[in-house]
Image 1 (cartoon, helix red, strand yellow):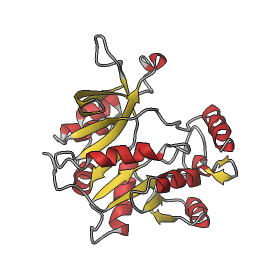
Image 2 (cartoon, rainbow, N blue to C red):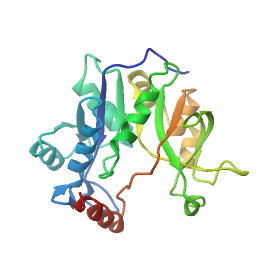
Image 3 (spheres, one colour):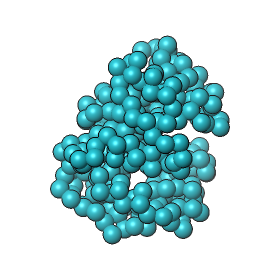
Length: 250
């Protein structure tokens, strides 16, 4: 069942982050151009100028890094299966009066994120039929068969906007035409986030290992907006070196 309301007017940006990472241990605190990575992500989110920005984390070291930079962090529990669960807990603690009617979930490993990529999905919530909005970008040719690149299948409504029908790790849809790389950043209506984290995992979510399929299974309107580029996500040492090179040029 969809959860459509009036366009939100009081959004908050939440950045889930934790030190327990298998591929890059301590990833949020890795140094990039003299600052921890999570501080760079917080700054990119602040530059979006949408609303307050808070890092949601169970780790005191991350809290200390953000507060030292002048930011704000909210402690959460450790046992969350996803960033969505973490931001939902943080939001309940930060805003029990439910003043914030939308939340933008920004991943904590995107230190060179373009603030426009944060603004674009939030703007889609101006359509009262949209429950969740998320960005996509044109997939490169070498990404078509890469299962680590999630593809968004959507019915276009305008040149840079559409309604999501499915998300998959396979090269879809078939036939001639472009494929779109899904960027894991979400703008939720508050009620949509509540309904999403309260629901059990869906069958297809478990098969594809993609939590956004739960929202589609719930009948929510998940809309996509096309942005120009895929932001660099830091998952490996090579990614880290690329991010360092890019930010040291600024």
